[in-house]
Length: 637
Image (cartoon, rainbow, N blue to C red; front, side, top):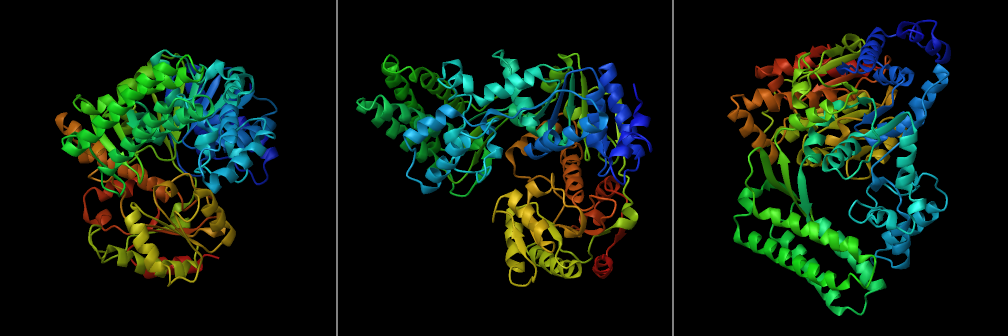
């Protein structure tokens, strides 16, 4: 078998196939670490800086091994890139490889049965939904995969998606008339037959929860697990190991029962009235909360009499619906699943009364229309460690941002990993010459009201020097909107603001214009790859500490304090360092890139912990002088 050194060497297959290829020692070293973990069924945690080539460094050993492999990513975008671009290219270069499959969660696939139901009975009097239904109906006759990402004109947040995709609750399974043509079933069969399956963290963890329950599986068992963008795993795991119920789930149940009511049970007037009453009660529950979106402590909220009464009314109405549906069971074969969903939701809603359980956070979140109640574990390490221990497999965790000041133990502890192979491979980029870090002088404290005006002033200066070509990344929508208003009439370059269009469209416009200024929050801090001339400056409004009033964070901090730890240093600081590293990583994406990073937060130099942030960032030249930063930008050709 050809060695890793030979494969990635000057005369290896990559050098022959890729124009301008040059061996990168960090990539070779990482590939050896991954190959060792796979061969010996070990765990490996690897941070690989931007430009290391970590994707090929883990895919090559995976493809050359004799094991069945699962590769999990943090985003569907990277999932598709691996499947459609990277893996086919690698198989061609290596001249061999495994049979590969792409597997997503069921909500990503067209459900033929639900499409047919809603085409026959248009769900709402909404021109957008009606138009999108027609587009999906056309797509259904052309697609082989059923992947809604391939449906032209249907964005990720399209209104029609809940009507043409299924959930575990409304899927009819083998009883579905379209079961043989089911795209979810076909995708899972293909995954079972393949040697390498590309999934995402959400699906992996959903599968873990299903397997724990003993009711089947979503992903076939494999011998090797590889997680890219692994820094996201602790938070996603916390989300999936939580239990939650929402008003949206109740409204979707009402909507699905109404479909059967209108098609088959229209003579049961009482059923229609019961559905109307439950729907009204659900919307009334949402009205007991402030109109703006918020998160809060459920233990405090449930003490309010009006909230308690509103929940009681919803539970009483769904209990009555349960009784009415009992009478319908013999009238329609479609009612049984809906009857089971009603019983399940009734039980979940009743948990909202009891908000006392050690080791868990009870919190709520509202959007404009809905309320979600969650019970979240404060520590996922035990459950994740059980996943690892119960499988005799190799486990590889990698990302460009796992270490805090060069140390990987924080990540390992979060997931309960007992790892022998722990490596940090620095980026091969010449950051000292390619990039300049500027921490401007005379900034107000981040919490001060004048901070927004300071950021606008700094942004104007940097945008002028860079001739557009800027990302401005924010930790809150409030500051984003404030700065967007301040720049809207004073910048001569195209201004793209998160919320104006989808993330994909905004990024396409940014690259196409070549001189745009893009303002974004959390979703633009990672998974964004803009190389070359279009991006020369990244401005970050402040250090990305989690919001101190977040109820889940508050519960975790209390737990850390109870264990004798300083919650700031054991919880808040590591999370902020990883988030900042992600934002900083947007600037230099290629050996030829040059640019300026501006962090508008004096705490980097005035607080003791600022040294930990700086030590965790690439080794860039630094200045506090905006004039020098402007001069650096003006010299970039």
